[in-house]
Length: 153
Length: 144
Image 1 (spheres, chains in turn orange, purple):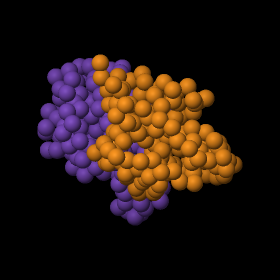
Image 2: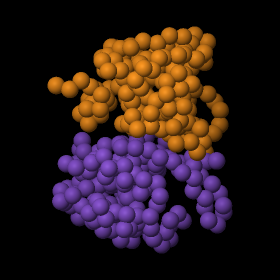
Image 3: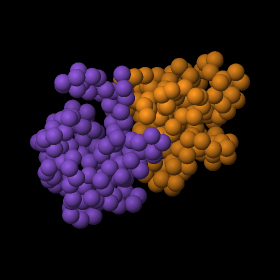
C-alpha cells in the first residue's frame, strides 16, 4: 500500500505570563470549523519543519517567531481517514514551543475568526480530544518539556 | 518527491559515552557510514515509540524509561546514486540514556563503537547528523 506523508508543524506560543495562544477556526473551514487551534500548518515538500512552522504562524497569526526560540518537543503520526482519496496519508504532527517575540501583535487571516490567551489547563479543558490535546497533555506531564515554558517555583 | 520521516537517537550509557553503529556494506543508502540508531516512522506511530522500537531492533538496547527526549528536526534531500530518485528526508533527533548492557547488532550494521560525545565528528560524516550533534552539544543536552 502506498502511503503519502504529510508533515504538520504546530507551535505553542506563550507570553511572559505563560498564557498560550489559541486560535479559533473559521466557521467555513472544511476541517473542524469553529474548533480551537494552535498556530501552524502543513510543511512544504523539502522545507525545514521549523521554518514551515514559523511561516505558518506568520500567515495565520501575523507573528514573526524566531528560529532560536523554537523548541521541538513532540512528534506523532496518524493515518488520515478524512477522505477516500488514494494514496493514504500518514500525517506526521510536530509540536514546537516558542516564546512570543517582544511587542508582537496577533493578526488573524481568513482561516481563523478569533483568538484567546489561556493557561495550559484552560486550553486542555477546551479540547475534546485529538492530537493538539495529546500535545498539551504531553507538555503538562513531561518535566523536561514543562521546564521550557512553565513558571518556575 | 516522496517524503520519509526517520528517527535518530544519541544514546548515552552511564559513563557518558555514546553509541555509534556502522551501516552494513549491503545497505542501499550510505553503506559503511557511521550512524546513530533509529529508523523509519511507521504509519500512525508515535515518534517516541518509533525511536524506542528502532533502538531495540538495531542495538538490542532498551532506552531507560523517561530519558528519551526529542530535541530537534531537520530535513534534506537524498538522491539515490543509481536511480537518481530524490527523497525528502525529515530527521527527528532524540537523546536518551541506556544501561551498561551488551549491544546486539542486526543485519543492518556490521560494527559498533562507544565514543566520547566530542569525538562523534571523527566518525559521523552526514551533514544533517553533524548539525544535530552540534545542537545537542552546544545546548548541553547530553549532560545528566
